[in-house]
Length: 215
Picture (cartoon, rainbow, N blue to C red):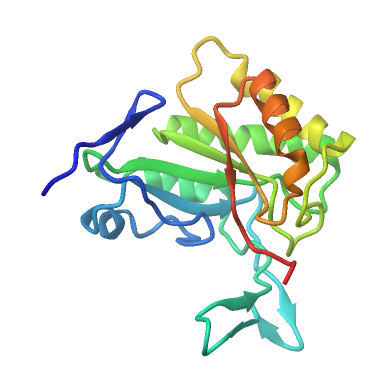
């Protein structure tokens, strides 16, 4: 029996599930995800500059799967071709009704903060121009410098969010939903403060879930 679509943020989702932001690193897979009936498709997290990802003992993007649980450990390090490359690909995609288009972005790891934040906002603007419906600010990847498994409301996090709020959320003609992604390992006692902070800044919500480092 067909179920009615879900409406949120002024958008229509054909189903309440979609892929994680760690998939589709170069912006592929939208047609497949839509055909499978997902309510949204999320392009893998991009940074302002192309990243080859992590190498360990000569192995690029090392990963180990576990035969009993089906889970896996990885240390990929955000490999991606950059905000503008993926945004350009998304701009050319045909859209499917009920399958929302989303993208995930991160400030460039290891870059001086002022430059990294400026480039992050420029990347966000590229996705807005590409017609992306929802944008996820990824603060939760433990495999790159500057991200950590259980974020605290420290000054660095607040500065980054305030910068995005000032340059994107405060615009009167904002045409995109913006949420912040925090780690699966986030201290549950901090959730209320995190929610209050992002809502007060004008973000549309949070996403909980990403690579865990607490086993």
